[in-house]
Length: 261
Image 1 (cartoon, one colour):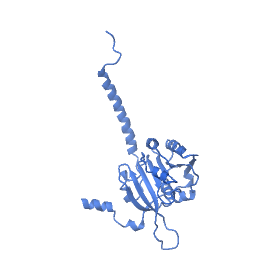
Image 2: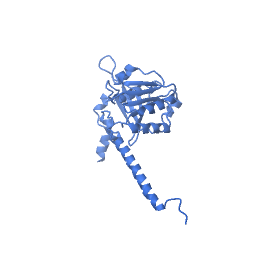
Image 3: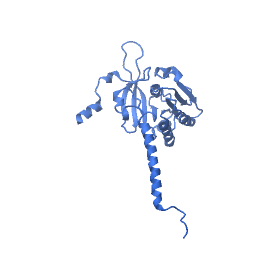
């Protein structure tokens, strides 16, 4: 009688079960480390209460899109991104193709110049590899990348890299044409997508400039619903604020929930 070349089928399930069990343990460890990261709160109840976990997820990919009339300069979106990065601790890697960032402006949003490391690429497609490489450096607080195009595959790579190290990725979607603007609406693996536009400021009692206001739209949120707010722009510590005219008003969502009970 010849010796069988394959093991008996009865021995295969035990090996498979052990392999599956080990894979499950690895997944649980990865998920546990991701869930253990405390989110970054905005400090505004209306915003934090709406976000899953009570703030912006750390170790994740987030997109910020400029929606103002001067979208090619991405002024509001840039300052919004800088304010988020400012509230993380540690150095920030900023990857871009155009050296048009105004350091004093970033400082007014809380991001001091000595915290920013600039990496300038010659082409838009070279920015994403820089961002991915930066996300592997656990010593960084966050990595900002200015890009026009972002494929679903590339966004998944960035999301996985951010999850692995806990470094947060902030992609600033800049565009100069209507066709490029439409690219920012395509699906991606980002946990959140924000759209920022200037809003009319309130008159100030004395001559001078008041605090700028933004319309902040949460266009996409994993595990949450879209929502819009009118907020005051980042202060010198990167913090947003609910517009003064709206601060005393009750949250309509909370009122609806109370009526439904």
